Image 1 (cartoon, protein in one colour):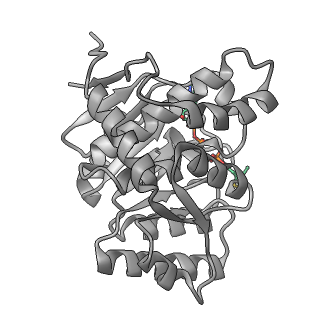
Image 2 (cartoon, rainbow, N blue to C red; image 1 turned 180 degrees about the horizontal axis):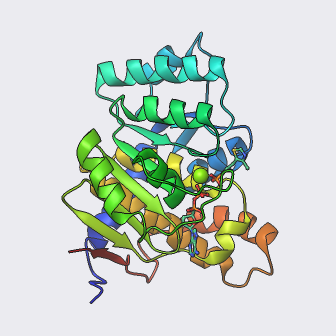
Length: 270
Ligand SMILES: Nc1ncnc2c1ncn2[C@@H]1O[C@H](COP(=O)(O)OP(=O)(O)O)[C@@H](O)[C@H]1O
Ligand SMILES: Cc1ncsc1CCOP(=O)(O)O
Ligand SMILES: [Mg+2]
């Protein structure tokens, strides 16, 4: 049975802290996602910066409340910037998120994703194909899109989280978040979200923002999934197609507030 009230009030408290603190989130993300991810962070109340040059990545991570690393349009100079930013964040105990975009599509991409995953991310956020690939299984990724479901990836996600000592968020129709011991299912979102590019990337940077204000990374990841999915539902309702949804999603993230008469649908999984 779905426990509709699970941690709902704490989720809203975390959102209030996010808005009060407006954490600076250092994003190394892809060319496709930069615009929508930065706007999603601003809309929900955080402060984004898209900074990837190896000359300043470490310094920027040092002044940020969270770091997010996304390999969507990677190349060797970008990867050097990622590694420097991660080293700087790790030295300061700053939480960081890995988005292994397209892991499984090419050997280079899969190898870089696996290498970064071993550098102790706080959270890995990916679609089911990407998470299955990182767990060493056949992910079946179609470029940057998934062909698998979070349910199919659930055991792999749990094993991956346990072996890396991190939290894993797997997205799709029903999102899952796990640290290898605790698993939560998040029942939010709308299928039309798959028809707008880079929404997974936007969710990844929002996960970073919640990590900056919520100590428990399982809860932080779950709140990010729930609020982003809830905003997606609000945006899809009344949208004639993906173009409208993309704009309305930013509005929905902005108007999410404690007055919203919605409980977060977060369900513990046995
Ligand atoms: N079939 C679906 N139904 C509802 N929400 C979905 C569906 N597929 C993806 N989403 C939502 O879209 C967002 C991006 O997830 P996903 O498409 O899995 O990531 P990516 O863009 O990295 O492949 C998440 O908030 C997820 O919950
Ligand atoms: C289309 C595309 N190509 C390289 S990165 C990218 C964006 C992928 O975004 P998402 O993983 O959120 O679908
Ligand atoms: Mg993605």
